Length: 627
Image (tube, rainbow, N blue to C red; front, side, top):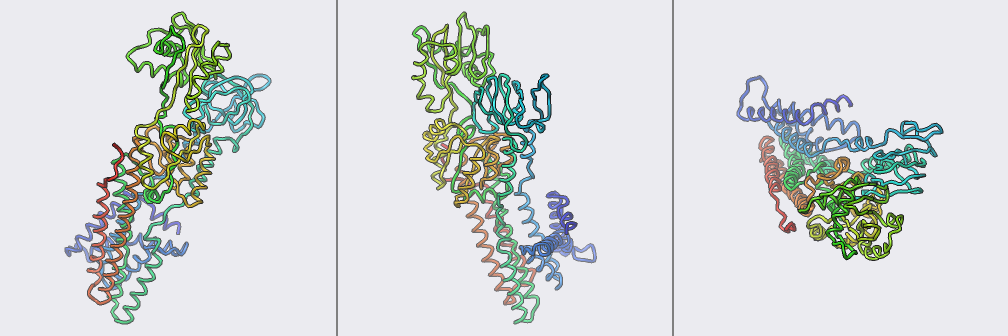
């Protein structure tokens, strides 16, 4: 059996297309009675297209006693050949292989997301010893080892900081848009990146217990537990085979004409039934591509039509994922807001911190350019920066930074910024020449028309959910702006995964939309996963069923409407094809149809199915919310 399976898998889609072209030419030659050889050229189609179908049927029956549509097709092929109806056999084989090819084209390629994630696993660690430091493989780190992590290095294992202060980029684990300041006693996770300042740490979770290894296992388990939808033709194949054999046997028994029995088997072949789903899916995928969606799984749109909830990640999905200066406020009469902005941008000019870069970048987008360079620049990890600008000592950083330098009136700034902090914004406090001078407020900005998109999703009958690793204040503020009632904040990858599992156990299929590595397990586990392809990580895209190439979430309502329209088209195709088949069976029982004409009649249903599905290529959502 394994040898047969290897033969069937050889060559791939290019081979299948080549065989179909040759078969079509052979069938046309047979139709016009062109016979350069002794045998009918329809036999070429039988051999090229029919033999694989028969082999598939044999493998399914012998290995798992699995009765699929190809069992009935095999019976019809063999019966047609036995009574000399070579053309009917070749025609049926060709149509069935065409349907199989369309199904193969809708199935995504094997993905390498887990391999990419494994590459993020730290390879080495810097262990402290009585005589200095030594580089060792990260896999050799033991519980309790003391390690040193330098700026720019990846944290090798989970642990606790013993000395030093730093800022950690935790996006790989939590999806947070901002680095997190860490100090003595704080925990750090493997796979996260140390941005500034070296620190010493104690290893607490090593090997398979580390955060990055847990992430890999989450993705693997989520993928393994995700059930695939079975094709409709195969779902009802057992009943179709039983009914067809019973009808053929009774007809032969009562009429004594075997040709009528064979005709029943031919017209009962589920060609149109097999084509009904893949042709509609192919056309819908074509339309989705025009609207910026890359459908990576063949049945993703079918699953999307059944979704009851859509869970949105925040950063990079509902927001731009880039920090912007929202407010600048000076409390010194002699210093305008613009002057404070200029001084802060100049002080941050040499900073490598994302907050400092955001301030400088935003300031330089204005007409005014920075004309001075900071002197005596210092960057204090986990605190902020200090510099001298035009002879004035400037401090720009967090609240702890102001306390460390005992800046007077700092409490006034805290009171004035409390509302911004409640909204989840980041505040940079500024002092000039030893006095509290004011503050800058930075925040991530919502995507254009994000609120209208959420309203449009809700209008389709699907409940929006905010599922984010950001803090409660930030999540609540964004959820309020977007009219999202169901909000879950401070979510680690495991917690997102648990929520999706629980919802789906309650028969509420979930669509997850995210962009970061931390979203990959959820994208895998969800009934449908949609990744932001433009700014999202490669691993998130690889884990998803659908990628939004241009990151324009305004097209999401169109995709949902398209999926529902596609399912309606499939149901129409199935209803028509089955009705036509049963009508043809009656004519076959009465002796009005012979095998060749029967094959042509029921294949006319296949043509209708293809044409009807093609209308999905130009589908337009009449409830357009884009404007």
